[in-house]
Amino acid sequence: MPNFDVELAILISIVIGLILAFLNIGGIFALVIVGFVAVYLTNEEEANYKIGALAAAALCIIYFVISMFTPPDLPYQLPSPLVIGIGYGLEGLFTLIMGLIIGLIIYGFMGAIGGYFADKLFKPQDKPKRPKHSKIRKKIIKRESKPPRRTLQKK
Image (cartoon, rainbow, N blue to C red; front, top):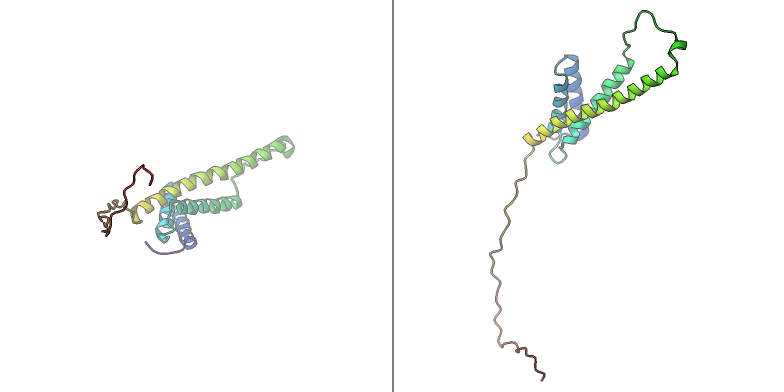
């Protein structure tokens, strides 16, 4: 496994995710690739599935910000603002926030799956060690005189 810092590994995986999105390759599978690449590039001590989830969640936030500036397809005739009312705007804001939260959960989960695969495939697993049995015998110290015998009688 390459030994990059966590930040650099996440940045490289986000760039790969943006390239895959630009080439229209993958979809949800691209999120698994982003998590996989992020964990694969991280050094072994810090490699964890959470890094893959973080990389995919950062990609979700980037997609969300880009989508905020992308204009929607509007109909030819818009309704009057007096007819719609303020509830329509609050409903749209609620939908926007819920979309961000659910998107972060889904992206994070898919990135964590990719990170888990990279963690299990490329990280050396610690095998359980056999318990050591002490085969060393206790040393018997020879005494010149025997210790006094203990009895219940007083002297």
